[in-house]
Image 1: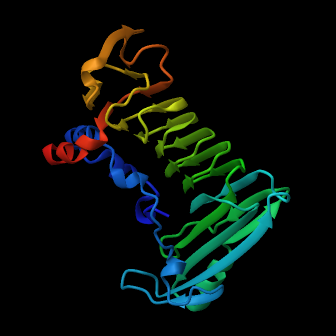
Image 2: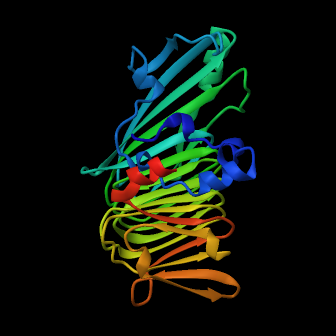
Length: 322
């Protein structure tokens, strides 16, 4: 579960920096390759000494509440019971990855902290996962800094199962699904890795990361989008629209036609091996850059920031130069 939980929920301060110059420098950096890793990062429940189900007390550091407790819940059900995986989320971390069976396997890691053990236990009880009319819902207590609570949901789903997840302050990660995927969240990050079906993702005041080589993909983020194309040809179409930076990583010799739309010429930065093959023109007062022949199947539109195109094989040199 390559998602790095500490950076999954996004703050404006981290994203925008403290002045215009740092913001501009940040916007022109290449996409970080770690964003597209599929390696597993343990949840707090896995990191504890007793990963069994049931409530357990956790040792804490000096900056944490005096008492913290954890609970692991597990659910298993068949695709016949839930032909479409649908879920509503409160503030949480969610990950779904494909399996080869016809059954779902779901694990909820819940954690709560408070001044007393009884208060922490009562708070933990408010973290609940329920299923009603074939929709799963996660209930979370109201956030209070002195009484923090977190939830981490991991789902193994049949690869051909459609997934629809809507959340608020919910970080989402979907890996290896070959079916329609519809995700929406606020103030958090959506990561889509090797999803090959019809993908529709919306992050309000958030970020979207996508890595793959095919699909019918629509991405819309109020902040930024990071794209990693894993083959020279992208099979299908991709439309990415962001309010701020769109960062694109291409393999050497990328051949699929794409179109970039930005506010001004200086908002397009190309450091890939195909830069000398890109043409530009104006459309309705905006700057448009086109690569390849025929009708572009890939569209990158930044409403107020740059679009940066880099080659994966040039990534170390770009980082060193920056």
